[in-house]
Every structure is written in structure tokens, then in C-alpha cells.
Length: 311
Image 1: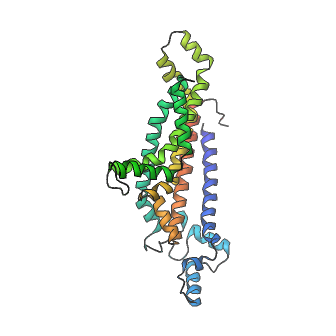
Image 2: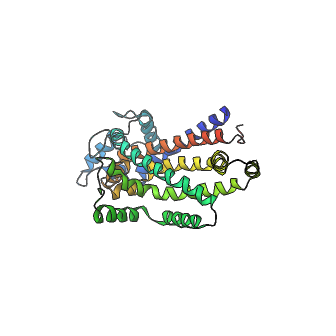
Image 3: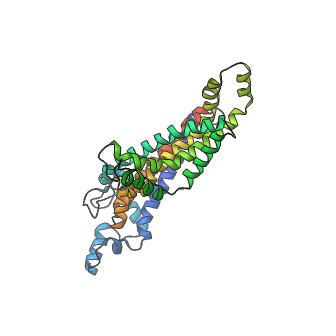
């Protein structure tokens, strides 16, 4: 187990290194950073002075070293310093952390909704296979996976906010504000988790040890909950962890539709205003969280399944 964790940690460090390279290259892919970041009415002298101050006049490999370890007043990315926001004139990392709690709340509520709906639905669909319950669940799953987030969000706004006047359409001032965004973000994940639960339960319910438990007179409830669900939960746990990571970094559309003040909404605003330090800080933080969640999920997976080889 220890060797497995060490190997996964080393793999995670490699991924983080690649992420830092991508974040650094991202700005340079747009062209000359000075042309992107400087105002249109800047003189050649202003551009040259800006390049010198930011270190953009140095070779690319030197710029990457400065990006990691600092240059001038910057302490470097490895110390959590992505520079200052060009628009807000505040540290980029501070802006990201300021908006991050809203994204965490949205992702957690969306995952909770997905689990609460998907687990019992998937179990019932597998238990009552080829019945109306199974057919309705399968249709609902296909519907959930085929609906674009922006369309679903707009439909929920039209129905529950405009039509019924039950829920607010934007903002973050109370629990009622998170319902529509969480439903929008969580429906697709609900459909995916439900299908994995169903397929896992079908595979386990046909196993010999399940038939043995039934032949010994174990109640159907205990057969499903204690024996079948535990063994079918391994891929489900993996998927839930991955979906949480995806939601943390992939709620940009949902946050834009509902004007949710999370990291995704901040990134869209930063891109529109060419505020690249904020974009870099947000992308790096979300990538680190996603890598961390994957590492935790892999460790849980190994703990649940003793057949995994740790060497």
C-alpha cells in the first residue's frame, strides 16, 4: 500500500509540473505578452519598459525560471505568487481564493444532489431490471446526459423563476440561490453516476456469492445493501471523486448563466479583460485540486479493492 501511494504521489508531481508548463505557455500562445497586456495607445518606449520590468525581454527558458522562482517583486509561482490582477490591482491568488468558496458550495451541493438521486435510482433500476422502473430510469439518464448545461439552466430559470416565481435567478445571498445552479450542474453527473451504479449492481447481482447469500435465506435488503452495493461501489466512488473535480473546474457555463460569483465566473471576466494573472492562478489552483482529488480517490479505490497490486 505504501509503495502504491508513493508511486501515485510521484505521478501527481509530474502532472503538476506539466500543468505549470501549460499555464506558462498559455500566455505566450496569445502572441507577445506585452502586446496583449499593454494598452493599445502605448508607445514603443512604454512597451520596452514594460517588457524589461516583467522580464519578457529575456529568453523563454529564463522567463519560465522566473515564472517559477520569481522575478523582481514577484516571489514566483512555487511560492503562490502569480502577480497582480491588471484590472483589480490585487494579488491574483487572493481574487481566486475570494471566489473559491462559492464554487466549492456549488460543486458540493451538485454532487450531493447527484448521489442522493443516482444511488437509489441506479439500485432500483438494477434490482427491477426490464420493468417500468428500469425503463423510466434509463430514459431519465439519457435525458440528463444529452441536455446542455446552458439550455437546462435557462429552462429552469424560465420555469421556476419566471413562470412560478419560486426561486431567484442570480446572486449568492442564501440557500435558495444555490438550488437552480446546483440542479443545472448536477443533472449530468446524476445521469452518469446512475448508469455506473446500475451496471455495477447488475454485474454483482449475478455473482455466485450473491446467489449463495440468497440461498442461505438472507433478506433481499441485506443482500443488496451489505453485499451487492459494497462491491459495486468501487467504480462509483472513483466516478464521484472525478465528478467532484470536474465540477470544481467545469462549472464555468453554469456560473455564467446564473451569475454565480465563483471561480468560473471570475475566469470568464478575466479572459474578457485580458487579465491573465488571474486566469493563470485559477487554472493552476483548479488543476492542483483535481490532481489531489484523483490521488485521494485512487487511495480509496485501493483500500476498497484488496486485489490491487501495490508493487
